[in-house]
Length: 369
Image (tube, rainbow, N blue to C red; front, top):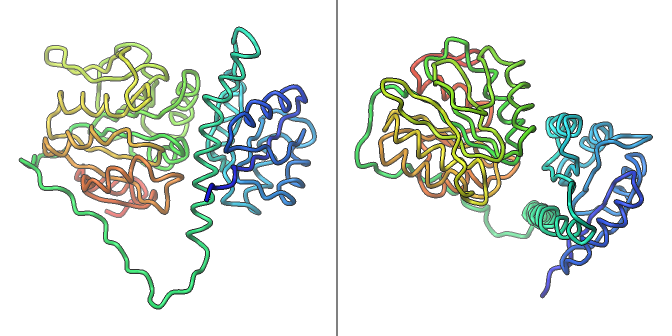
């Protein structure tokens, strides 16, 4: 039996955009725009009536803007996916990061600087439609799994896979912390990075799947909340302990040896796992520089970017901490690492910073000694 199409509530104050995006989405056979709204107040009313699979939400609107809409929507519908549809501007990027911190599930950039209407339509179908489809199907699967079903016995608990045996184990303390994240990552990073102390004895390299400008704002926000200095890497810079290096959107970040020192630099190679920057690229470069003295953390994210890099880290003797399914927005990246048996620990998000402290041999702020 063919599954019914994913039902979308499209919210935007522009009638032109509502009509254009609706037409583009409905060219996909498995997506239907069930309702539209011109502001957040209408969106709340129509969400209650339509119960869509996905909400596509504009940021700047009259009456009730995107952020205020999220604040009202989330307590009543905590599980419905909300995809922010924003512009690639300083203001749009900042508002989108605010929305993600308020519980938005994902975001897609509106087409800009496209040649014509047909090109813009192709952008909607190639960029927005896949995100809507993925979140709509995942939402339905989660609802189905949560429904009570008759059973003669409770389901057996499946233990987490044990870490794979490694060719050799490097018992020395890690010399670098590398972190990879994607969907849900900005919130997860704000739960981890600010809990690391200024005395952290290693550098931190972070790849978060985001476009340019977004990564710069993310680094600035993390820096404002953290004891550590957090910088976006936009050119080659030396690596020092106690500093966090966030990969710039649209280019890979790699670690390299330069004589007796280490730098992080940019690599404009092709995307990996459809990502640029890619976690795998950065993780592999860390192994090339530090060998098995690498501690990797894989946070929430769609797909499996980081899987190959974690395999290399484990083979070299390093350790991998993966976020657990219950605390992940989507258990794609950490799930792939966990199912492959590469995770030394699989932990809820609040336990990740204390685990970093254990691996580094010291207690971090807010974690048990």
